[in-house]
Amino acid sequence: MADSISRRYPEQSGLPFSSTNPKERLKLLLDELGKKQNRKDLTWLGIQMGRMTNHPPFSYKYLHSVLKGTLDAGWPLKHAIEMSFLRQDGVHLLKIEAKEQTIYSEQEIDGLIVLGTVKTCANPDCYIQFVSDNNRRKYCPFCRPTKRR
Image 1 (tube, rainbow, N blue to C red):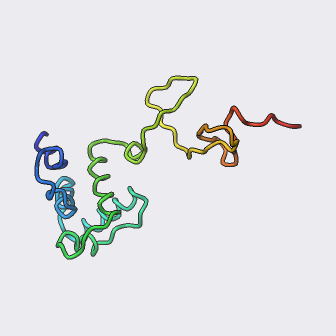
Image 2: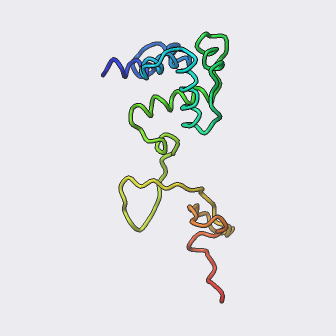
Image 3: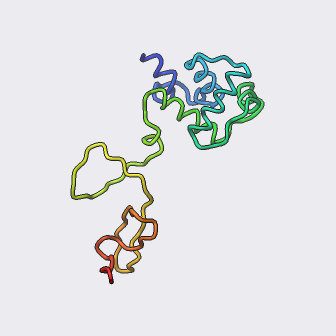
């Protein structure tokens, strides 16, 4: 197990930083998935990594060229490789992409994940940032005008 972690995360195991290049990481990912460097397996891997990162599928030719060293891996492929390793370790995709923030609420809920866009209150005297439950809402709960009927 410790050997597997040192191969997956070489920057944490004291190995040289050059071992984190995408070509070696892609080979390691294929080995851990039990896949070979053939057309069928690379096509399958490209589709899976594309789905995971909301990118178009990575083509067989692109992955094969990265493995051969004729093309440099772009940011989307590097990101997909890292997400694949984290996914194998059992980390949920929402937790991979999410950033930890401090949220104040009246109730305490452990392990809460809030998915939403943070907005700043439209009142020029208020600097509160809030997560809205309605896309059209401009004011925080404290500055929201009273309802008119």
